[in-house]
Image (cartoon, rainbow, N blue to C red):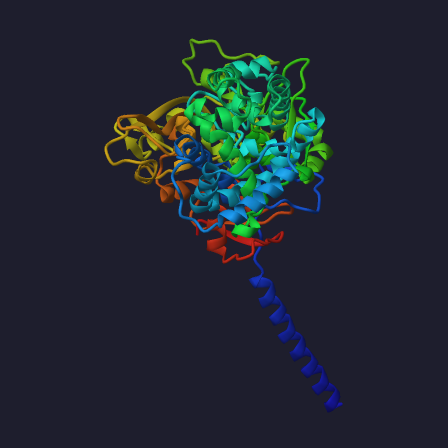
Length: 613
């Protein structure tokens, strides 16, 4: 009996200790707050996604789309002196053997001469790194060129001409206005039916511009019957080639009439042959091609049925805008337009095409929703205007005491009710709400005489000042709409360069070039540059002014204003570091990795991330 009682007491003791441990464990479990989704996130959460994700290094993308190589090569071709011997280790006899081997399998007459040797050695000495980068780009563009040339029976070696013309940059623009991979002038582009308008410049379209170049080469060969002369005519025009033939006494070989051609054309064909040589013998000279970001066979096109911006596409498909720009260079304003009766195509990586096609209707619904939002600031501005002005009428006529309020990030029914001095129950009744949940971006009808503008006057007056007459506020990415824009300008002084100016105003060289439509890093003394844009925004029913956060603000201040200090973010299914960084303006992937000790970039649903912490 005693033993039985003891066993009962012992078992009860262990039960109590286990319960205490379980309670302690339970008490330490962190309860995850409910995460409010934006309309964009709610759309993307329903997407059917592929298992394979495309990873793109944005810094590498900027490197490939940089115009530095184009500027350097163009300068070399125009200024290079073929008569000056270059000290670079390449035996002349070995070079002659390689040129002979190239000549045997090419329709071009590739012969050794001292001028060609000097250009090859000059490229080897000064442009090894440039050619390493160009070879990575060639993996995407050369298959396009070869396909077009094969259809017109044009020598495939002419693909190397695009390296000489544009350094394989479809956005390259010369001082004379020649544009694209094949550097067509405006008139020549129109002559070959390339479309050029406010939205589109097909001189930058790899497929259409290459087809036009192929047609031009075929016509010139029918005239001259010599491919070197075709290249010379492509550079200086057929008229200059004809004059050189006459001045030489009727000779018809490029090397015989070269001295009678314009100076730039004299170095043009040798630069083409030197480029061909370096591509053919890059391994022998230790030139290692850098990795290709994307290859042509990994991409596909889709017909766009509504006007869309690159930003909308990038947000929906979780990819950098720079990659969309690289694949679709003919769209000048980063917008795919929609003209009645015309087709416009968007080129994307194949896995992104699969996501787009699987969710096409949802994507177009989101674009339509964004178009409606663009009209909202006008409606709100009229609503807060003096009462003597007419109020916008919608489908139903609103009573005089009804006000409209757009749900912003962090709002709930209680805070909105307090702002307008009404009850939560009334809010639900006026808007046919069955629960306390409200969707981000939704507009609520509120029957109240309270003017939230007057109520918040004191708050507006205490907004930080960035200029003598400008009240500033940093706008959240989801809740704000832009209207009037004022540019902040800077006059270039002696000793300035884009790097020092960018550092002075807390921006980047890329942003400065984008704001001022610069194609190179050179800026003239006394030139006026736009260094930031100050924008007027309408948020809810509050009208205020903001500085565009991606241009001139100090990087630290920008991050502090874009995200609350110590804010936590819980990873949802489908999230990536890129998509999370897009939710917080001014926050980069590197910041998130640093704050959370993430090394490989892998994140899992439910994982807690510190933002700006």
